[in-house]
Image: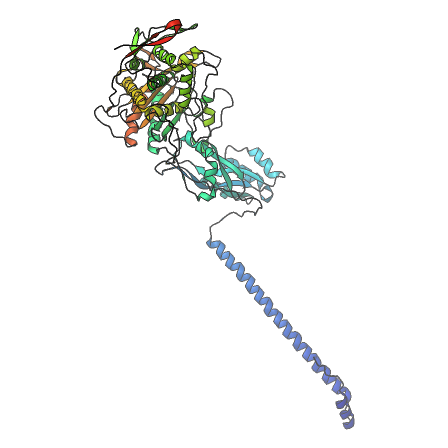
Amino acid sequence: MIRTPLRPLARILNAREKGENPDAIEAENRARRHAEIQDGARRRAEGRLVVMAACFVIAFGTVGVRMGMLAASQPTEPVSAVTGTDIISQRADITDRKGRILATNLLTHALYAHPQQMIDPIRAADGLARIFPDLDRDKLRADFTGERKFLWIRKRLSPEQMQAVHDIGEPGLLFGPREMRLYPNGHLASHILGGSGFGQEGVASAEVLGVAGVEKAFDGWLRDPARDGAPLQLSIDLTAQQAMEEVLASGMKVMNAKGATAVLLEVQTGEIVAMASLPDFDPNDRPRPLLTGDPSDSPIFNRAVQGQYELGSTFKIFPVAQALDLQLINPNSGINTTSPMQIGKYRIRDFHSYGRELSATDVIVKSSNVGTVRIAQILGVERQRDFLQDLGLFEPTPIEMVEAPTGRPLVPSRWPAVTAATVSFGHGLAASPLHLAAAYATIANDGKRVTPTLVHGRARPEGEQVMSPRAAKMAVSMLRQVVTRGTARQAEVPGYEIAGKTGTADKPRPGGGYYDNKVVATFASVFPASAPKYVLVVTLDEPSVGRMGGESRTAGATAVPVAAEMVRRLAPLVGLAPVTGDKLPTIEPRREARVEPGPAGGLQRVASN
């Protein structure tokens, strides 16, 4: 900027020559300079005002736009940003074999508090106590007026409860989104599903973890993001499961039983179509386990998997089937049934006297303890034990449930002669009803080992051949005759060719010995006998039913009628149409053999025509 002098020399000299006052020139230049300075200051002030006006317009415009956006959006609670590992809350659905939902997810909210942000903590505590009667009003007041900065109030809220908390109008009460596990069918298949609960939690999400059943067994699978939410498809049929539970609950009530369980198993695949245990529970509100007393008194106890019962005469088919497989006997072989029989200091007798001899088939049909022991003695302890082990009766079932390892059978550590005898007719070895179902399925599957599973459509290796197909068919034929003319006549359902065996076992006392008036009644069945497709096992704990002016606890009077009604309901639901006519394979009679005591108390086979 070029500055003009206040007293330019040329003009001063010129003014002096003309006799003018040189100071006027300086005053003129000074006035012009001041005017230029004022003009510059005014322009700068005007520029600043324009900039400030623009800033105000932008600021108020931004606030106005934001207010409009908030007015048009859904109200949400602010959440604080936290650092750390993200919580994986998404969990895959569980469905039945037809894709129907058994377990899914539901969006809900949790309620938490920031006491230091509260305007009226006493009013907030009183309002929450009215909405949630289970909360302690005094404790809430103490927490809200104390030094706590964060407090969980409820982990899950219903929409009605959430609205009621909103109406309190307290800014210190906040909501956190939650994905909770929902079991839309309530009690149905509760022991199979198990239940779930919250693991790691934050105000923005919570981790859902399985706590029992398949929810726990497949916890990692259900939470795996790589599976993109693909559902876990179980083998059970929801309709069949509901029918089974209805019939079982009704039968348990009619038979005055303490508990009941049932298993329906596909013979060829080992897939469990339905499995129930009563009493049961609602997995949406899973009860706490019992800390004292008998575990089976708890509704979360799974009798089908965890129950260890002496299953009585249902075991009798095992030594007979093994003897048929080894060709030590045939269905018509005469078996010495003279009762009682002596083993050391112990006597074994039959419920009824069957005379000196029964055929091997009639040993099963009439359920002779003595005849079964005679056959087991032909086998010998080692072979008997190996066969039971091959049937899977010594180890927990590999079913996909976290409870499976707890269902390990109670197997005798020693096998003297008397133990081998009692095990042959179902005493001295305790196993679960699921073990029994798998063993019967192995016989029904032409002797190929069947492993139970709860997963539908999974490729599985073929089971080992435990016994010959011919011997397996003979065993099924014997079981069929138990229904047509034996202890399970009430199990006959026209068109379904039911084959099975009853078992009534005295319940052991906790301190040793057996109860005089408490039993476990079981009926293990296969149908249709001519081409086995399903195995059904029904077990009642401490049943008792009035009969002929007295009281009966036998499986034939308690478990069998329940199983028959179950077949009537379940068979059509699984697509099994009734057939007419007897399609059982014809077993050619072999040369009859009679079993008699041998020298020195041993046994020998005596052939006869």
